[in-house]
Image (cartoon, rainbow, N blue to C red):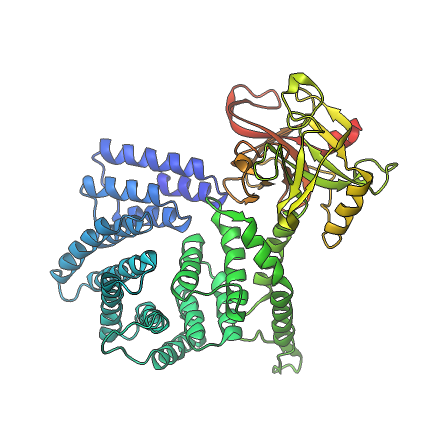
Length: 566
């Protein structure tokens, strides 16, 4: 079906705006057409929206399907799921209870009805588990009741069918949470024994090549329950490489580990598992993901520990060798761990590294007016020294009254990722280009501040400067990343709807979402090489390269154009 094909192609390149337009077109079709639609196609369309966590569109499409009597048990479940992930818990429970009734009344041999019945009960367990977590008050009797209802929903399914391992592992998670919160819930099974049974069953599935993504995630969670962080990491690495593991699955697992198991970066378990999950989610998310500076700081602090463990696991599996019939050694990968996840993690941490040299520029140190970033002078012009300079927009710092910018003597510069309390003032403009041309200002720090700055940045690697711009493709596939201080607030790294649209020297157009205060931010390609200086956004940005019309876009200036102008 054309809607499904179009949606898949847009989501593949993270064209989320285009995917949302697909949803609206499909909804209009459903309401205006009497044509029959195969329900399995409708279910796949909803699944696609779920995969990239586009729950608003998922809910609107599911609602339109139900309104037009195009409905199945799975569509009912998907509708409820979209509401749960949108925080509409009461409405979701009502839909799920209706689904349970409908599936109970279905033919006794209807396997689909049995499956969706169990799924609905599991989702009710998730609602009550989430209500308990959200309340954050284990002393409240109502909250204890939520956790008890969650346990009943999950465990009733697992008792009926021990193959329903995700219901079983959620039972384990609820039991362990009740223990940590010192709650008394009657007749709880042995959580460790339950985790061991689940892990044994999934290991059998894995060896028989029947394990799916949720099995891998469940095995990792069982290892969390059994306090086996290295084994959990192996399963999680395999999980991230599964074809049926996307943003929805990864975000669900991350939420479970952080909110229910309460893992954090202060423990070895949290250091190993949360790092890989965040990295893989970043790779697949494509929208609504912003990495805040506190997360960056915590992950940078444990980077050495995580990297050491990854290196050890990769080395260990490379040494696992067996003799085949031809007598030649063959490498056998240990369990499911592979180097792919380590590559993703390193890419993710490179992005975190790029945050370190980004500055907030304002009239005081608590509220920004714009953003800037550090480079060595000789990276811009070979004949210059290695002195550190700050680059920002001319409309952020300038001596020209027409720019309505801060004057260099007014600006206060701080580096939040390094030390937000250390301030740099009284900078000197050494080169500038008006906002109507290259919109760039290069500033020098005072000699005494240069020494302070060198000490502050002694352990960071400054940006490699790309000589080239990424190729423009149709449809767009190249991603652009921006690090800045939106609205003058805390430092943020945007992994959102960030596709390169077009470029024409000196301009780069991209859809990376930015807000006021991001002016002067560094712009990076997919390899985290510096390609530009962000300076503008518009709903009616004129197209480049002689193309007619306008589009919604952000605009940066190519760093090589600035270098050439120097």
